[in-house]
Image (cartoon, rainbow, N blue to C red):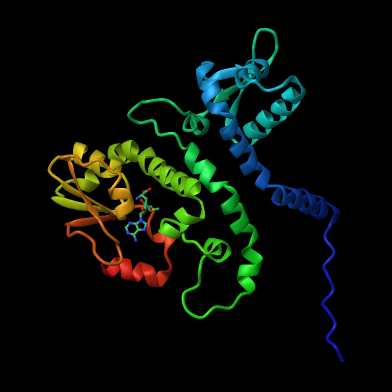
Length: 287
Ligand SMILES: C[S@+](CC[C@H](N)C(=O)[O-])C[C@H]1O[C@@H](n2cnc3c(N)ncnc32)[C@H](O)[C@@H]1O
């Protein structure tokens, strides 16, 4: 006799209403990311910066050349992005018009500003919300069902037959490859000022350091500037090092962290190990 499925526990009305609200939230959550992508593609943070960091909807619509038929939808987008914390509500102006402000998050999405500690993160957003990333995420259920012998490919590798950071991703989509590299550099450069201020003592007494996967060397240069006695070396892939102008502050080495890591008293692995499997991490740490 077939086993009977267990009875489903009946939730209370309050639980059911909460469950329904949560279900809607989780089902449509991707629209938060897409709203952020839309704001970046329209250049909303940069336009707000040029308007003094605070704007009414008509001024924003005019700055972005949004057609009148879409103004009510721009209002919805902005309110949704305030709710998700991308912008801040700015009260209202003398005529009672609703205002929106840049907050710390949207400030790092302002392009075309040259300042030591400003590194626009727009390429990170555009890469992370790109069609290739979305397609990979949509392939997750099929990926789970496939049994594989040997190393398990990531969902991205499974769906696109390409791996991030290597030649295959450049062949898949050169624009995405450039965005990913740019986005990582921007991320790498974002918090270095804070790290130098908050973790100053960490580098005391150190004579040499290798920044493994150190990209364009911004982090290593900041360390060398704050701690001139530390001899800094950057290791990254040849395609990254070839594009990095050499300087007299940091030593740049092109290579693969699985094969060689330039010798130093300390090795920095910032935002590296999460990308690899446990076995690969052991290989990296062995190096
Ligand atoms: C996510 S990692 C680390 C980024 C950086 N340290 C940071 O904090 O943002 C990205 C960097 O790793 C480099 N990379 C990827 N695979 C590598 C390998 N096998 N050997 C050396 N560098 C590699 C990439 O070229 C890229 O610059």
